[in-house]
Image 1 (cartoon, helix red, strand yellow):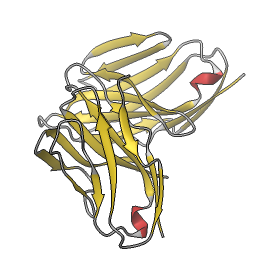
Image 2 (cartoon, each protein chain N blue to C red):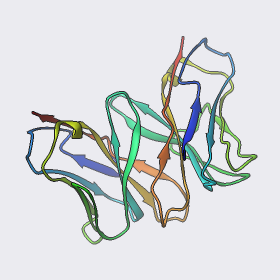
Image 3 (tube, one colour):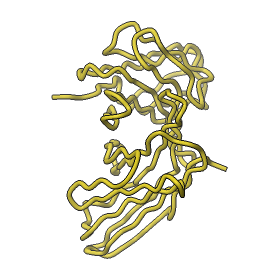
Length: 113
Length: 110
């Protein structure tokens, strides 16, 4: 089944403890991206990647890192999480902007205490 | 001011009614997306448009590039259509930067 897999689905962590949210797609999509969703603010893009080793900042990149060493994986790294990074996170992929929409992962609900 | 504006923010309608959700954008775009998010959080991509009109079942999406406006229509609405509908715009700078509207919460009453 074609899908984007995010892990974990739920995570509670403490301020300052490094964490990684994984994202993997099995559709050979070149584009991948990360978003956060907050009440009243909607979805906002954190980082995106046009292909392997090509990443760029979205609207809210502060406090996050990404890497794209393989086409299928696009992990989101929080080196020193803070409470304002408590949010619902989504990963998505697409084959190309000209032919398809996005396939979203199921989301990761992160709480930083 | 958000570059992508949606209206209405909330919409409640009776089953069977024709639904229209609007999206206006202020920047040049290469594509406009309509997304659906059900309670429980999962997001599904409904349409990607760069011109004209697309139809999938009871859903129709249109875009007017000159007026910088897109609409999502639902015919013969059903309670299972209750969800948040989000429009999002790809800019026209050749990258994957995406700007989102704040969403329209649709409730269809049986």
